[in-house]
Length: 197
Image (cartoon, one colour):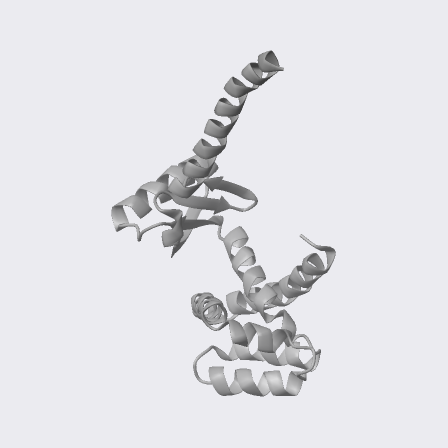
């Protein structure tokens, strides 16, 4: 992680922790978690929104107005209050980091971890549950699956748990097999070239 990126996450975490604590105190945690999930989905589905928030040429007032217009009446008052606080400090560009930090705070406080699973085709519920239980047993925490589909993987799946990345895709296996075959063929041809010389 780049130093600037790490700094942004730290600042985002300050706001995320404040919102989490306020949500607990107001007994609105489930609603705030739903807000953050909706906002994460929105930022993923509309990349231009993230670019708009990150644009240095657009002031906090314009960013705040857009968020108010888009989210008023659709998210909890506590959520909007944090956005307003971020806007007053010209920090709305940190909204994506804030959403990510909130998810981490929530997982840590509720003894849960997030497992990202990217598969070539959608997984049925039985397979999802099998993966969730296997990982939960291994790590000793409740596991929340974040699923997505990438047909270019051809088959299998990729898994990310924190900093750990496991590539079990067919595409990766084919690339690895190609590299192995290339090495095998090269090693068998090499002695012949030496004899010919």
